[in-house]
Image (cartoon, rainbow, N blue to C red):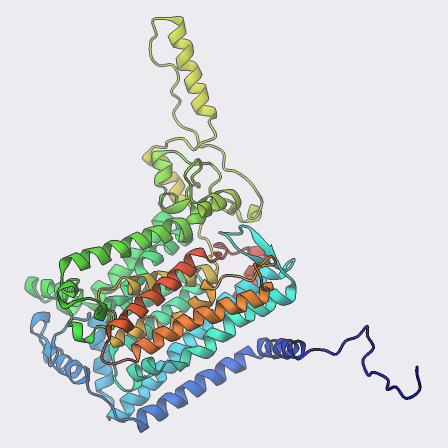
Amino acid sequence: MTPGTRRSPHPPSQPRPSFLRHLIRGVDATLTAADGSFPALAAALIIADMAMAVVVSRAVPYTEIDWAAYMEQVRTAAAGERNYRAIRGGTGPLVYPAVFLYVYAALAALPSAAAVGVAFAVLHAATVGLYVAAYRRAYVALAIGASGGGQLKGGVANGPSHSLSPATTARAALVSLLLPCVLLPLSRRVLSLYVLRFFNDGVEAAVAAAALLLFSYNAWTAGTLVYSLAVGIKMNALLLAPALAVLLFQARGPLGGTALVGLAGVVQLVVGAPFLAAGRAEAVAYVAKAFELDRAFLQKWSVNGAAYSAETFSSATLSRSLLGVHLGLLLAFGHTHWAAASGGLPGLIGFDRLLGGGSGSGGGGGGGSGGGGVHPRMAAAATTAVDSPVTPAATRGVAATQPPLPIPSAATTTTSTTTTATATATSAATSAATSPTTPTLSPSGWWAWATAYPPRRLTPAHTLRTLLTANLIGVAAARTLHYQFYAWYWHSLPWLAVVAAGAPTSKPAGLGGGAAWAAAVAAHLGVVAVIEVVFNIYPPRPIAAVALHAAHAVLLLGLWHAPSPAVWEDEEERGDALKRL
């Protein structure tokens, strides 16, 4: 060393760690600590949320909108009135099912408005807690699924995967959990809907959240019972019904799924019995008003309807168009995403086994479709989703195809007049018997398949994503969204935004895999922020309504392109860990 020169504290081979590296290490250490103490963090979040809600309910004056009308309707029903058309309040006739009356009769028994505010503060914290628990379930499934070999599964049901380092996978999975959970209590509008307005939308949202959590545990019977109670509070819970039907059929098959749908109907008959059994006119009035599908809304309260002219808003053309959009999106997502591992919607309910066609190796319910014109997700499911519901548990995860089921041979039962005709018929029969496609079955063959369908366990990530996406589709296609309707879907938005951002990849365009994914997450959470801002603008404005429609479209487009989670639980890799939660 030359005299007078100073020794560098960092040799050239060991450059000074950059600020960014320090920041990344700090984030990793924080995430690691948060992962290990998540139950305590979740409890602190819920307690803080409840404390905040109680403080707001006591410090901010209550705003009367529907509470007085609710109480009038409750008193009328308690006095013995059983005709729903005659049960009225200041806002008009009663338009909610019977469970609503039971819940608000209990709230009316509380000693003061302050006590009601506290009850709704508890309900707000309970809703947050239920979603935190459900998202924790989805996170654990992701983390366990990605731990072996450091791979994050994409595509459909164990489809193509992107090789990732274990650290990147763990970081992405944990951020996917922590960000939505932290954001759940922060909606100003939703908090006011609970503790300052006492709307029944918050009550329905809490009960629906309990059903979601039960479904994530594969508790289909209990979840169906609770879900039906949510429908009995307000029928917007029916937005989940199409996706729930897909899940029930995947978990229990067409017969078991249909039985659970029937169970939900029985619950509605039981809770509505006082009105349904009162007489023919009372029963008709109950069904017509409690489940009023053609209800007219005022545009002055419509957050999304402000984008239309008054004439367009009230037109039948708009209603039919939005209904078509709703059904089209449900069919598109249902066929190519939710039921892809079951061979699409026909395979889910076994119609392909009645009508023929499709490959014998379809995963899920009825054999996936093969051939040209198949959606890429369907092709991936038919190729890689080999853990079929009719495959024994011991062989799940092993590539296999179902052998063609026997059918009555078309054997040469016709009397040919020439030897050539006889040979042709025999050749055709032999070709049909050895064809790799699933042959057409009789109804008795379908019945044998349906009755042999064993119960399956679905992954929490698939369950939640399917249900919450269907709910978002219904909201996006709604003709009108009042301010209180925000409670229908706020708690799903942060998680869906993270899901819509996709998965970090090892071969990104431009940025590193983790950085590109972080940017996508930030962008989609920005979309959620736009939705929050729109619902806090009063009165509704056309430009805000356009922004709301655009935000819904961005989220749905992201969910369409995002990699789908595995559908079936892998008993060997995931079962034990999931059952411990």
